[in-house]
Image (cartoon, one colour):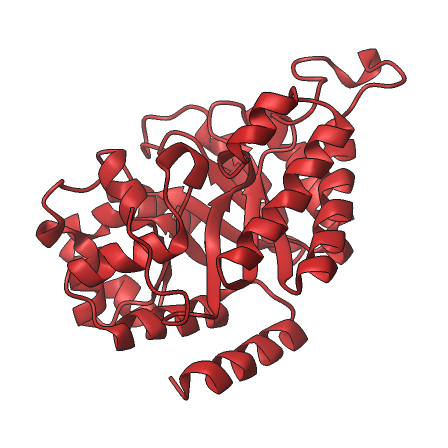
Length: 314
């Protein structure tokens, strides 16, 4: 894909990118999953790749169980030397901290629950609490969109998100991507979501769309991903992002899974431009991302100051 000029949007912010969807292709060939050195390398290289793309602040998300080598093994059966979900989080935190220093960017992380594995969610909340001081800033729910009233697994996830809310852990939820708009409403009302991953189908409900505009709900929009996955029409001029931008909806632009989709953030900016978004609207989305980030107050203050120095006041 054609990338935007590197100096056009030279200071970027990304809120929706999956660590296991951003592994370098050569790294995939070199390593196997579920090993400390492999996970450390993936996370460290992620920082370098972000820096090369002009990303100065990023929140990367992943499910620690899927990167462990104890998948489906009960706690009591984990033998010495195994690489547990907790080990994964500690290793990723170490690598992101080093990568952030070495490549001059701020990296925080989000731990994902998986919709089809509700038995993991309690441990995810526990790990979020334990590693809050290491840059784990939020909990997410990823996988298939929930269908409220039809999904028997939803109640266990909602319990985890209530615990996250009670303990001051930020919340974002994949909703309204390929599933119905009711998933967005469920995320807001019963999972205490502060941000929505994707959320394109919110436009199917005028009342909910109006509510989200009024409440300044932040949508993590992934333009290229949304078309490739079939979440949005192939005709880019029918993409809900156009309405979001023109209606002043609170959104950011993101890549989602760049190694799988063969995109980068500059490419998503280019696609947004082809949809008719102006440079000013794209820059505003970068400021939106900074303000909606789960960064610490000090990180956010510094980030917004840096953005203002590069782009002016937005």
